[in-house]
Amino acid sequence: MTIDRPADDFAVYAIKFAHRERSRRQEHFYRGHTQPDAEYPITYYVWLVVGRGRIVLVDTGFTPEVAMRRGDRQYVQTPAESLVALGIAADEVDTVVITHLHYDHAGFIGAFPNASIVVQQRELDYWTGPYALRGENPHLIEPEDIEAAQELLASGRLQVIDGDLELAPGLELHRTGGHTAGLQVVAVERRNAAGEPTTTVIASDASHFLDNIGSDTPYSIVDHLPSMYDAFDWINARAGERGTVIPGHDPAVMERFAAVPGLEGVVVRID
Image: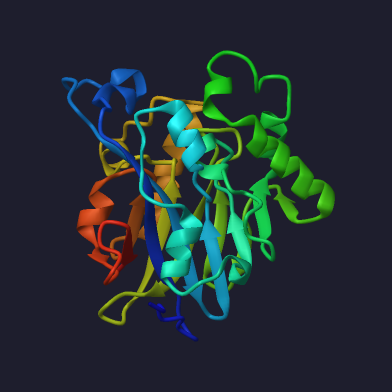
């Protein structure tokens, strides 16, 4: 199928590429939160922003090989395969935004040959610096992803920014930090189904689940706790009363929004 590419607006899609059922609530809340532990499945997404002459992919997921090696991750299909099913070839993507360099967001980083790849300087510095291989950090990345990012930097395709950036009118990157040193989120100004102006914030891992930001309880993996709370405040303010917050890993996203026909259980359009 071919999705609509509006000339005067943006359309936003969440694309599921993997899932993990055997996951526990206490894994996903800072210091286990205060509620009893329970099963708490996690879904892995990338996001697509298309319209106004732009095709922007937010994050790139991880590969089937990484899923197999890490275990307990049910793979659906690669993000590129889902894009093709939507009528978008890999070489049509003009920009790839890497929200952060954890393994589940930065695989396939070089798979979009004509795209400029945007990452925060603080994020790149951290994962190429002396702390990347200490503590639990090695589990959070795949070395080949970091190497690929460095190769893209050397070739001039990696756009390293320091702070906020307007990618296009109505399409804004905002550095929050918190979960990682240089985590960034994406704000998309658009019209909702009723034709009203609204803002969709792709929160990525600034809020893994709606319950993180909803209960004011950050995720369990913390780089800087005050920045996590600041991220919640910025996201809520930017989305406003009519806007939509899209969390990074919440299975409810697939139920909350309408599926793209023919891609049920894989792609939903954010309205």
